[in-house]
Amino acid sequence: MSSALEQAKAVGDAVLYEGYLLYPYRASAGKNKVRWQWGVLMPPSFAAEDNGEYADSHTECLLEPRSHTTLHVRLRFLQAQARTVEERRGEEYVPVDALVVGDTEYTTWDEAVEREIDGVFPAAELLAQPVELPFSVPAGEETEQLGEQGRLVRRTRRLSGTLTVHLESLEGPFGGVRLRVDLKNTGDWTEPDATREAALHHALLATHMVLSVDSGHFLSMLDPPEWAKPAVDACVNTRVWPILIGDNERSEAVLASPIILYDNPAIAAESQGDLFDGTEIDEILTLRTMALTDEEKRQARATDPRAREIVDRVDAMPQELLDRLHGTVRYLRSVTGERSDNDLAELTELTTPDVPWWDPGADTSVSPETDSVVVAGVHVANGSKVRLRPELKRSDAQDMFLTGRVATVRAVLSDVDGERHVAVTLDDDPGADLQNTHGRFRYFSPDEVEPLEAQV
Image (tube, rainbow, N blue to C red; front, side):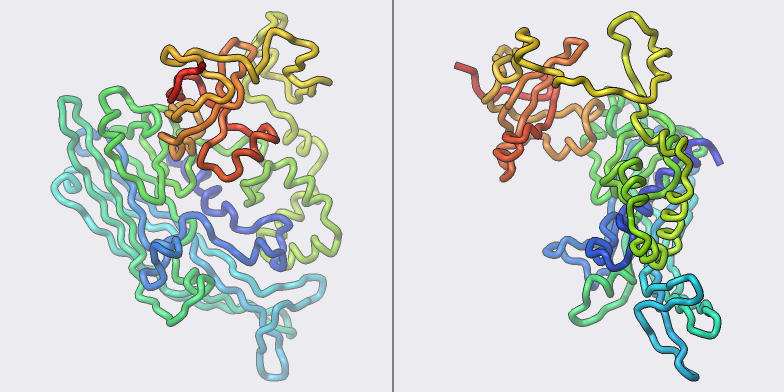
């Protein structure tokens, strides 16, 4: 396996289990009773626009193939597996919420099984016509005895779907093709007045795809070459977003992810293992897990083998590994000339000054609330109305959803390199006033905003 594909698998694994189980990692926690939020493709009978549930996804990206290029599509998803605890009572087994066997407690819970579907397609065949790949996963049941006291019964339901793959030559002298991949859940399950919990057992969960070629390369959707920008703008992606793996401009592999990421994402070297809760950072989650009571840890261990592994790993984590999670510097530019960039890169902790970076009593040369910056001949300052035009290659990938939105400038800031930044709140955000009060802004470069009015 190439390094790009290994990286794609590692990042894909993080996508598979994002939100699988949230801190405090016990089944009784309210937020662990509403599960499976990312990349969920429901059976057609449950999918509906009005409830925000869908049965399909569509991805498009650009590829520069060579002669005899072969495309490999690897579909990856989780399948819900119902794990039921059954207590033995005489000659019968009766479902229960939990059962203690020796020093171990077992809880009724939905686990997950990883699934992969592979398709290999010659580019010449895909250029001639779309190719459809049907797939299915059979239902299953297995039993694990828990001594004489009971057993675990694990059940999965049948799944089915189709992958449709097509290549289309781009117009113009530069060559290249547009790759289209459609994925559909085609399961025939139906149930009157079905609940989401029931439908999830017939859904493809955390669905994503790894697309790779044996020759040629994919182009970045965030920072394409100039000639490819019109073709990138014409690409349509629904419920997934294609990102390059292994390079920031072109690569042999693409990850079509339900979570928007930058090109060339990677797992942090400091990470000691899965924590599943991407809304937090490793250090905070680790410290919080350490602080759980013995009873809370017992409940977490009873929830799921993966939760048990988290608690056991945190309890056994030596101090030097915990220290690695704190204050790691990935890039720091020297501004004093007293240290080289290499010297600064070796630092692993930063200290916080006793005063804010901007103190009106200490530095009268800057005033974010009154400073301005000239954009297209207009002075933009606190109170200015602007339209957002984010450059995705420099900003958060999710800023694509802000393109064209109207915002109010709240401050103009300068960094240590003299670069200017515009802090804004969105005009159509109901919480804009509250965010302004607490200083919670969105930040853009001056060339990412379009003034809507001149300042008086």
